[in-house]
Amino acid sequence: MPNFLKPRTEPGWLSVAMREGRVDLVHMRREPGRKPAVLLADSVEKGVDDEATLSALKKPMRLDHYRCTTLLSHGKYQLIQTDAVAGAPDEAREVVRWKLKDQVEFPVDTAAIDLLPIPSDGRTPQVFAAISPESAIAPLVQAFQAARVPLAAIDLPEMSQRNLATLFAEEGRGQATLIFDEDEGLLTFTRDGELLVVRHVELTARQLMTADGDRRGMLFERIALDVQRSLDNFDRMYSAIPLAHLLVAPIPGVDGFLAHLRANLTISVVPLDVSRVLDLGAVPALLDPLRQFQCLRAIGAALRDEPAAA
Image (tube, rainbow, N blue to C red; front, top):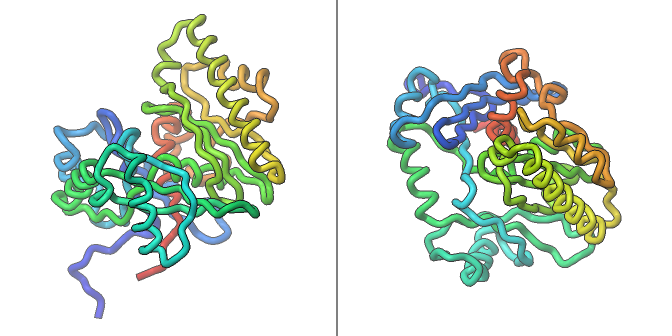
């Protein structure tokens, strides 16, 4: 007998991305043979804290009717590349946890940890270990619990970016992707939906937006040098994987950025425009470059693989 008291869960994922001063919400649905469809994309001013924000949004946005994921922000976790450990997943996580105790500045015994395999291509198997202190994870989880909003997953910006890159991938070829947001610049290298390399650029989108002409030119040059160095390193590490292009998210108001990269990099530079790969019929506002830029991390998080039906 159906449980009429239990809210119906909408298909797909709703990402709830807590940003500075706002929360971005994106609902994505995937169906075989079709572009992933964005059914909702909204940004709302944050309340006094995460719990208050979620509680205020729960009823008008029916948050308890979704399978929700959220994003850890910059500085709330570390993503560390390390040698893989043989054994069952739970056992491997515990071994890696204690291997990392001298590489992080927080207690590992209470930290949240997960492992993401890196394709070995004949090398020593390695993993990305995502590890976050209890002081970062607990308040986030407790905010969702207190607001009675179901939280099914916690994502990282690197995983969000991987999901986006996969939509633009060419079979058998690697994909480089560069996105700047409020926290930093993130350069990722992926192939066939798997994350291979992560590089951080210690600049924010706001720094690029507010820089004057001369300063902006210097920042462009710095970014181009960092990216070219990473491209060269990737070529040495993965010489058998040709890169299709560098996918770059345009930054609204930062004119000339992609043109500078095109002129100074040894790879084709392509703008990241989700309207090419997503069905935005229900949310035409995302055709606006500024709205697309604001919601990009949340869009990527909502592109999680669909879990098996319960």
